[in-house]
Image (cartoon, rainbow, N blue to C red; front, side, top):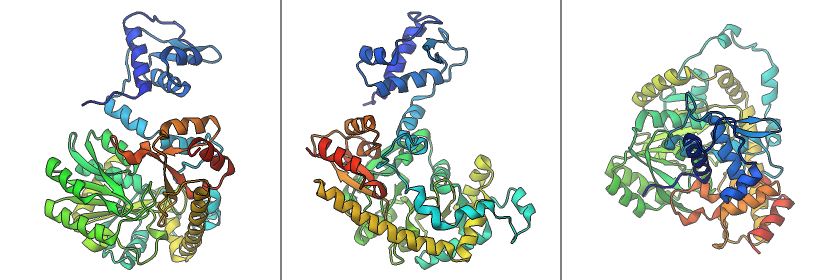
Length: 460
């Protein structure tokens, strides 16, 4: 059964229909946001979103201090985006807010405060001159596979995690999201079925919709994937790919059990399934942490790592570790789409690693995350959240809500009070009951405004 478009798109479609039928002519002033809210019976934010879509598609234009006016009865070049694109953009609304930073209390954020990273010596790298290398190198594109020195550093790190890999099996990217995008471009054809975790990494859902893939969610619990559901979905859809984040899962903060990981790999071998292991927190997890890539030997597993979660959200640097044949194909896609990654950023990280600064930063960050996690759990349990699974090294806590509480409605109420929440609905597919929850950032869980709001609105 085909899902209805988002409410904002439904409002926009109604206005478009009236314009194209001549009911609204060029130059006509549209109702104010307040009046449109009453007319359509929706929220203010929905009307704002709908008007933004109409402006983007050329049907209306804003006039400062006056309102919104019909631009033309039929735009000469309507830039109407296909439905799959609109759905993908809707999914990244959470990401958009994390970049725009409108709210005072940002408990739904996916990153730690910038102040936590100030001691990592990043700032001085932006100001220092490049004394150790030929300055001319910084004016060249650089190796499309990435800086060899940093790839050697990463290979050593992965070998310490029992992931046997050569520097030639590593491809540098603009963060983990870019890595995942390259993998999707390589493997996924329109209409192809791809498996993901639910709840899971919401930008991944958007990437797959942009590719017009059919995304099937496999329930993710505290110990890992629902393996019965996984096998049933494999038999029914015959997919080639499964995207997972085994350790320090985003959004739930939990980690797969070793038993679940072994069983997952047996199923993958039996059904010829390729697994993409996203490991954004690997550098602050204990050295003994198991990984699918180490258990599998990069046979059926493609490993994705990043420095963006541990150094700076604006320092876009990640990597893919895989067999050399796949890496060569991904290099071609990388060159066609972005040419190459930033050799300057890669050199900065390489220098931090070889001089020991990165290791010291990871030690400080690991300790700070552990303390913040303990404090956050204590605060949330004190106000009545008693079903929290302790995070295992990630930046997030998954807070199940009472069945009577709608996460999206709760987020809207919070927004009116200057509090940004990340409702579980954004991280799930379909009618998954696990969507009745909140993802809360450990660094921001103790804010009095947040705790008072949740106690009064979610738990009273």
